[in-house]
Amino acid sequence: MQISVDLTLSPLQNDYESHIIDFIKTLRNSEFKVLENPLSTQIFGDFDTLMPFLNQAIKTSFENTDISVLTMKVVKTNRSDYEPHF
Image 1 (cartoon, helix red, strand yellow):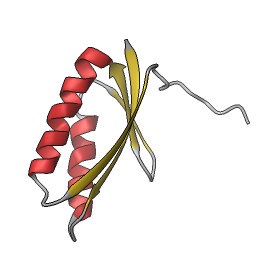
Image 2 (image 1 turned 90 degrees about the vertical axis):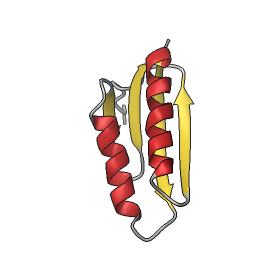
Image 3 (image 1 turned 180 degrees about the vertical axis):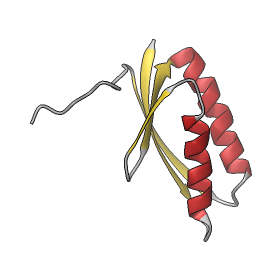
Image 4 (image 1 turned 30 degrees about the vertical axis):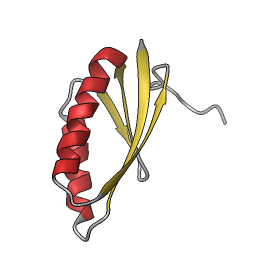
């Protein structure tokens, strides 16, 4: 089953930017398609391979911050080729 995941990482500390960059670099270095915009990062792939990868990436990110919030939306389809029609 293909999925699309929208992620927004918000470390609640002064050096938040470096933690966000590290997290995005981890996503980029994966086998999955990754799209970024100023507010969030999307990653696309097969549920059974993507979710374990995200589990480890999120855990590593959380271990490297004092307090962090991650907002995640999961859509049951691969929307990586979406283009607006307006």
